[in-house]
Length: 267
Length: 185
Image 1: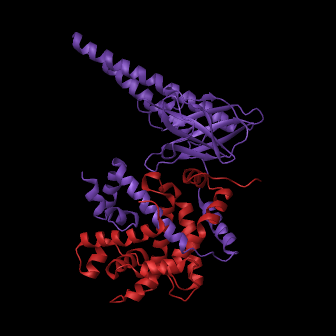
Image 2: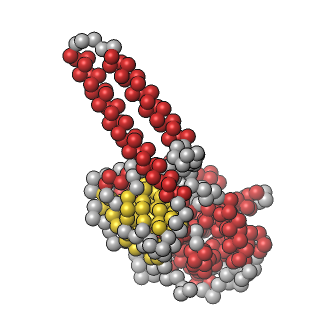
């Protein structure tokens, strides 16, 4: 692409001023991400519009500030702060509806496969195939029961009044994921579990951060096997206003990559 | 509590996503005047302009998850939220763009002195610079930036091809750029 011609066309100005139709806007956004010369031009246009707006700044009357703050509070109050988690139907302290359903499904699929196995003909080929299927079911059963025990562990932690919880919510609208931190009051011991977070691509890892006094502090890299619901003990901490998990290159990063923050939650 | 130091827009974004009071204080202290300035260029009634500023802050606060660095600077995103909220307000009141726009009106709109408010002290240099802008360029800026016309709509209104509208907009902004980014490109 001839970036000079692209720039001269004025499409970048149109983009910054938000006057392009959606399809064109998305295309330009992609082009900017791809070509540094375009990104540099956009930066100059944005700085120009920033200074233009600043040169025409008007200070609103002083009492407007609290009025605005109150309006924001009113809005936040409407948001649901409840954990969207399988709510524990605590009877004897263990099972939940969803956990029970998983067992039923599991039992059903195992039963179906055992039935099929007993009806098999004597040919080797079919026997091999069915053996394979049983293996798969066995693996599935293993991972399901691992998952299930992880869930019941976390139910217990949620119920434990000596633990604080911080729910880190998804920062990516297209992904329904979250992380939970269980923090022991007093000692600051911390346990983390992730739910629905995509497996990091090769060369990348998740990294946990705590925000203290407005600055992100490294809390460690998450091992690759952490994308199941497994609970994992993390390096502990006390204090902090928020926690976040970002996707970083292997080995981690001294500061979080802002647009790679996957989940974030306030204490 | 010691004042919060924020070294970059990235830190601001992170704080905003936390939805903390500190984040709001910083945002308001550093950006409310710039947003209010632009809103005031579009909305002449003071009370309505204040309402729009409040609505803009609510939108920015509520929809901060929709902003990502890939979209550009957070300031650009915020100013567009403010502009669009203001423009929607004028449309909902049935204000319609007049047929022909005079050169003086261009200058007035770009500098925002519709209601006779006091000019920013830097205004004289800016005014001269805008006066030096060709009418055909200024009108594009006026229609798009202050009246919310898309490139298509501007092209239809002025009976120009879309490509011409874009190149003229670029020329208009280049003049602003030369003025504001003096030593830079």
